[in-house]
Amino acid sequence: MQNEPIRTKALVVRTANSGDNDRVLTAISQSLGKISIMAKGVKSLKNKNSAACGVLCYSDFVLKGGRELYSLSSADCVEGFYHLRDSVETLAYAAYFAALLEMCCEPSVPADDELRLILNTLYVLQNRPEDGALLKLVFELRLCELAGLAPYISEECQCGAAAEFFDIAEGETCCREHRGPNSARVSRAEMAVMEHILSSPLKDALFFTTPPPVVAALTPVCEKYMEYHLGRLPRQLEYLKSVTGPA
Ligand SMILES: [Zn+2]
Image (tube, rainbow, N blue to C red):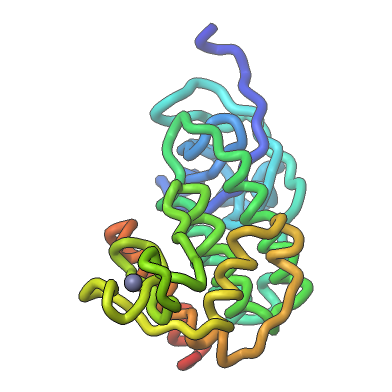
């Protein structure tokens, strides 16, 4: 039935103005994956739907039409993550997470796990803004895992020697002799952090602490890994780096 309304919860990851009053939303929906929504009238703050249609709003949408472009019937904000806007840094982390999520989701592919990951990460970021750099690692590695790109972390290379490097192209830890040209040196502590993030229940991965030098060392390794396997990283990463400074 073409005109049957569709109800879905989704996180708005991007908006673009359309004409004087309208916006086209890009959102990640549990059931529909990445969707575009024509939201008429929401540029006006008097519009009843406008509060639920901003970037980083997780909202309950009623939509019509489909596939290429849905049209908005109504939207109720479930969680607005308003405290992410309390600091430029926190908002920059959130914007980067949203852009990365958009890159890793496809139309018509349900995104339950991806949504659960970003919503939980944003909740924790809101409460523990000082842990942005660690939460970024957690979000990146867990998103890689959901995209089928989980790296393989072991204290031993396949040859049995102690692993001292992370091979970015192969996505696994290895010894000096078996590393490829695109490898980064990683310590035992750094491997243990990656392993913890990848193998723990999400709640435990999001609620742990590790010394800042370990986070700082893993940050470029994870970024290079994702850039290599995704082809590019969102431009929001450059902005994030400009506001957080060198790790
Ligand atoms: Zn080896």
